[in-house]
Image 1: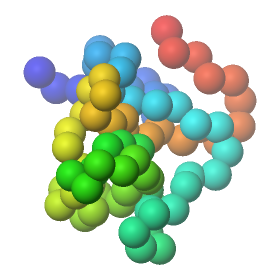
Image 2: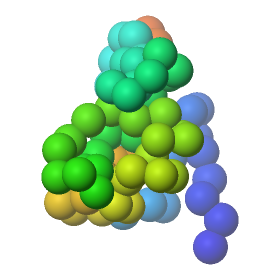
Image 3: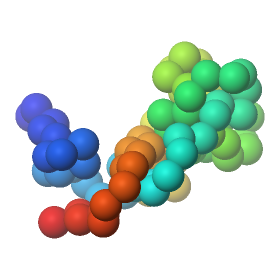
Length: 80
């Protein structure tokens, strides 16, 4: 299955695999890069992670694991 995006917001994906934030994109808790994931690490703590740290430290996407971060700048968030 190919994930499609509609105006920057993913759809046709399980709702618990992404999280929509309005405003600024957070920074990775392990370095100064932009965070693309908010999730559980193999060390047992939660945090914002860049792609590199999510690959090495993240436990995956889904309920109780983590979410991909989607940042919406301006306008209303429409999840439909």
